[in-house]
Image (cartoon, rainbow, N blue to C red; front, side, top):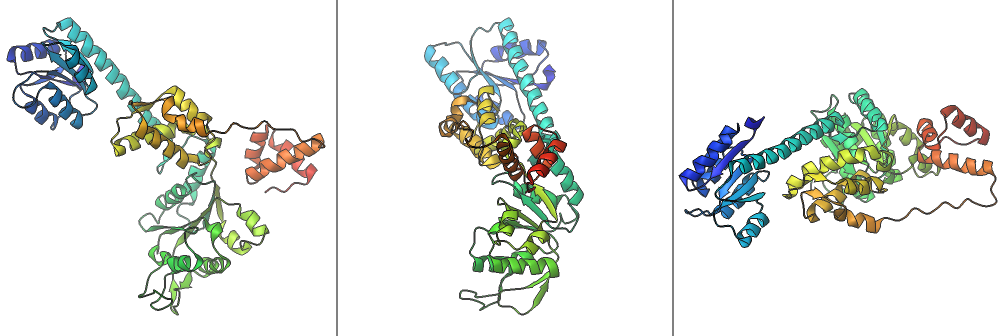
Length: 453
């Protein structure tokens, strides 16, 4: 195990350098030496070392502090011990402030060196084991960059595998930030169309005329500013998948145009007369209740049924809290290096804050919160104080006042109706929330003549 960790001794005095290296080799470690800061930096660029012993006073352009700072730029995880014959409070403070893990004074005690290295290696072994376990855990619960061990999400992963290569349209419903586009991409890249384009369009971001041109393209001169022919997203997605985000926001006119594409598999560019055939799989997403929109006449029922062939309803983050630790560690692993921040863990207290938060913005809000904490934190571990902004913005849940003038049956009726609405008619999920078995819930639905959605 010792041979897994390389050690470097940097000292311009040959006797000191070789003596320290010999002691460490006797303990079973792989040790290399350098007689100057420049030589140590050059070797570091070619090979990874776990621990450095660096002399504070060295001639030749790089003293111990400068050498340590350069090495840390190349290997930030390395443990560095400053060695000197001139021990002062100021030099100790400077060394520790710049990132030295330990500070020892010449002449060195071999037993002290052995204990020091053993302690550092023990910590590094634990860190390596934790990292390996965390990566295994993330891989175990990861599917197409989506991380979850929630039973409902695992059902969705299995459904994706079943429908990925079908041509059928898919409707993904869920609150903002739950990962609807990630699910759409997972469907596309898990199926036969993976080698073809995946094209996403936000239907809420554009006006009707601009969205029509964006989806179907236009001919030169079809409207003011149309200086040339332009292909639309449907043409660009030929053979692949088009993802229509926030489909509930499109106008009645575009609903009709979209219905034609789904039925006829062809369309016309804006201002065009040439019929364009297209082979595109449509995946739509919305955070709205389209069933209500259909009942209220704001969304075509025939289009809804065309889009809703395969329905995927994503649970909110507050309904899959067991995923929060997995997601947080994954964000730390990726966001930290991107921002150039040495953050590698989160404290239990900080994680408890995240587990107790309601997350109205779901996974996207959690990711933003972790990124903000990484930017402002002062240590390598995210602490409770780094998430003070969450605590300050949290709103205490109001105690439910039992309505007066209502009978017990009326209260039960309201509770069941609200739960069915929240779960979009999912009896299994609703019965779990209400704490009753499904047969009991079916009896109550029949008793009160309640709609399923």
